[in-house]
Image (tube, rainbow, N blue to C red):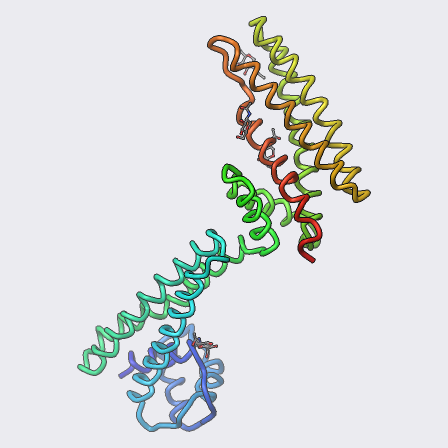
Length: 312
Ligand SMILES: *[C@@H]1O[C@H](CO)[C@@H](O)[C@H](O)[C@H]1NC(C)=O
Ligand SMILES: *[C@@H]1O[C@H](CO)[C@@H](O)[C@H](O)[C@H]1NC(C)=O
Ligand SMILES: *[C@@H]1O[C@H](CO)[C@@H](O)[C@H](O)[C@H]1NC(C)=O
Ligand SMILES: *[C@@H]1O[C@H](CO)[C@@H](O)[C@H](O)[C@H]1NC(C)=O
């Protein structure tokens, strides 16, 4: 009986219902706290007292609580199913929802098995099943936490719109960069313009870093062809830094079209840089990886600028 008492109490934590308080409540809580020293008696009484319907039968409590939990989980399943069918929800969120869906599905079948075992008075099996059920809230919590990390709707919506403009747009990079950059802000970004400013400033710091990488490579390199390519790249990225300075100023004074043109021109330069390496025989660009982030950051700004003002 002890074990089932323990289970009743924990199953009850998964939901709550109408009023009712009786002697059984405090007795059960007392039992449970003897069974598990980490168990809070006060917490238990508070929860159980809010629970329905006063009954003298503990087994009744248990089966009821499991059945309520099950109907709760079943509602959860159909709710998540609807969200998964919703085409306006982005892939990242759906991925998280799929995890929640699977957890809920497992939970429903564990609950079924626990009721069967309980009715057959197989308390050990019911107990194990019950214990496993108790872990679901934790699993769900982890999923919800994962979801909430990537769920700033301003960011996911805007990256999704950019992806619609250009199917080669790196959606994952977009989310990862903007989430990371906005987590460092004192207040979360409140509109697309804030996101554009983040991307342009990062582009500029990227270009500045690339300039210093290229100048180091230049000092180190002896191949005249590579040296001449690197020399040109150095010039291109130096120009990009000043283009991006102008772009930041343009955005700040709300000249969005001008900002977009400056960013486009900074990207043209990088293509020229990479192309030169491609023309040389057996030479590969040492800064292709840097080109990728720089390029994607530029695309974020270019595709987001037309979205400014569409959100509020
Ligand atoms: C499950 O139970 C909780 C607590 O009573 C309630 O807030 C929630 O809305 C229920 N969820 C579903 C899907 O029934
Ligand atoms: C460019 O910015 C991206 C995104 O913040 C970062 O991952 C990358 O390391 C930066 N590259 C350079 C060369 O600064
Ligand atoms: C310069 O060349 C040396 C020797 O080839 C190498 O170990 C070093 O990493 C290079 N430095 C840079 C910045 O490429
Ligand atoms: C620079 O990187 C972007 C993104 O990966 C790519 O589309 C572009 O072609 C690259 N530029 C060159 C010249 O390789």
